[in-house]
Length: 234
Image: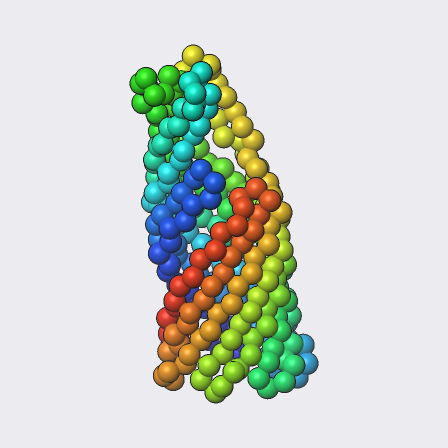
């Protein structure tokens, strides 16, 4: 947009599972940002953005002891919507014309709205649970470092790593048959993120990329994904 201001956005198709939960859908994102014009040395930047995954599909597996040898395993599904708003800021330093390092701090506030659902009573589920509509919020703080290098005039490589902490602000409530109301607090966790991206600019405004990235959390475990990107500049 000129004068250091830019707006970008994108969409991604995702499918992933963590522990006994899975999620599938489309993730939309948008961001407005400002980068201090190049005057040599350190350049400051900041931005604000939104992430949204409306109407995604969720799957859950619940296990409990019902007196049988293997216990009971119940699978359920429902739909949900996720919205996240974030602020970020940091500094970029050019080591030389082909290499730069960026340090970023991010504050993210997310809301996950889950549609209520009920499990089916049966011989394999003697204690079915009922969940009402709920909205849970999460606060995340993160510090990130990324190194970008122009391998050739048309190929660039970025390697990044981050450490952060998410804070679960709400509890999940259910009504279990023959047991009554049950409430379990959300799980906060310390996590790390890492990854790499290789981009090939094959036109004046078109870049094709491949990436691999992962996250490891004290609660959620390790999740790794890979894919391709297509970026267009206007």
